[in-house]
Length: 181
Image (cartoon, rainbow, N blue to C red):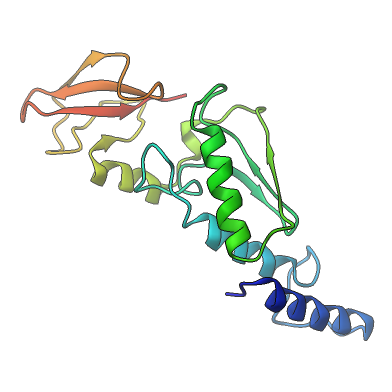
């Protein structure tokens, strides 16, 4: 992984030299242009280390908040319009990008199309479950503690606006369910 402004400039200078000589570097590859895929992968690795402020075991990438990554910008979509964590997420992404040498990468917020729980990665769903939060589902809700489907909703409102409070009838443990939307 390439980090730091000087290292990135070295890569860009080498790729520019390859472009001007007409040579296509196999290492750079991709149809987006030389250096772009490498930059995007580095940015993705940085984003994979930025935790969601409300659920610190899941990254903003696994939660699906990151809509797109380009060499010059990252587009994010909050889990819902008005989410109080949106500014914190943007601040944390900015700090992580800056620390990794990606100071020139812009962060843009897109509200349309609206974020959906379908964007949570399979790894993200497993991280939610392991943390004790039932991942969103359109079917039976399984208890993240014991796996039982013998569960009930206690309140449509949970610890945050994007979660509902549920209880397992078998192990009697309360748990949050990440709401589908």
